[in-house]
Image 1 (spheres, rainbow, N blue to C red):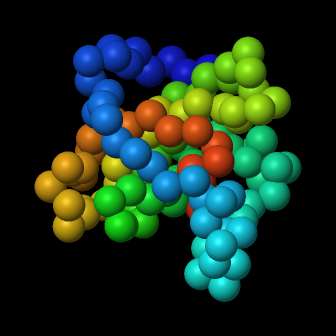
Image 2: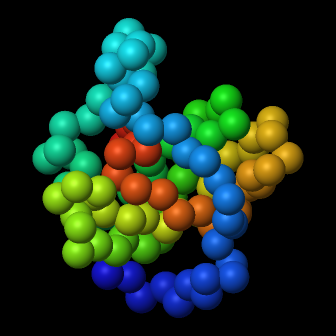
Length: 107
């Protein structure tokens, strides 16, 4: 679904993103849960908020891959980190892979 060529080696590995859906269940006032319709309508170029290592941050979606197991695991995305983080494990402009259930917000 994208014209961007992404080599697997360019994508940052080993990041454990927070499941936004589960966090909403535990802390509904602090963590937003997006509707399935909103998640289904995410397009290349959208900015989405995800979380890892105790930080929430924005990522620009550059590739969308609808998996065969979409009904249970959602879409897979590749995005470019769009802000500076405190953790040295993820940097501005890093490419990361995540799923729709990791997303807290869409801009």
